[in-house]
Length: 200
Image 1 (cartoon, one colour):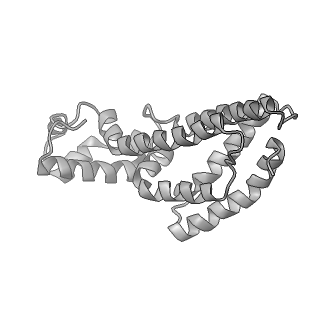
Image 2 (cartoon, rainbow, N blue to C red; image 1 turned 60 degrees about the horizontal axis):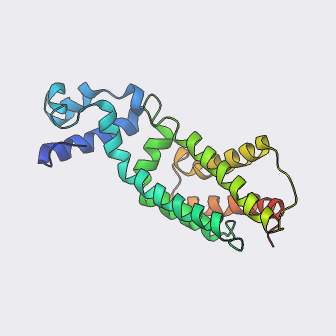
């Protein structure tokens, strides 16, 4: 966390964001940031304890809001056998989330290599895989799912879904382009998901 809220701190945050977005975590230069801000590199550490702490500050709100979104969806899948997680409404939810946190998502997906957040997308794939397995078990216990899906297939399906969603930031789509892309993703994947889960 930053240690103060001064005007200098605000300039540091702006320059850090520009630096990480332009060069990624690994290649980001704190010397370059400090020169832009007009302080010494040592002076940066009066505001943040570490380079990773600087990066975390830029993505903290995105991570917290994503956890809330994931908890909401996961809770519904775990508890409600009639819940349909494959509604096209979710494509708009994802798009709105990304564009409400665009720079944070871009940093996590495209610029985090070398930091402790480098596994963010892989972690999402694991979460998606585990959530789908749990949902399948809920349906199976209610007699709605008879088909067994191998673990490898769950992982492959989840990987395809998550990767396609974040093409939005990899390709720097506009929001209109993103909405069209996400609609395409839903049309491509949701019928297959529904068939696998036995959802009408």
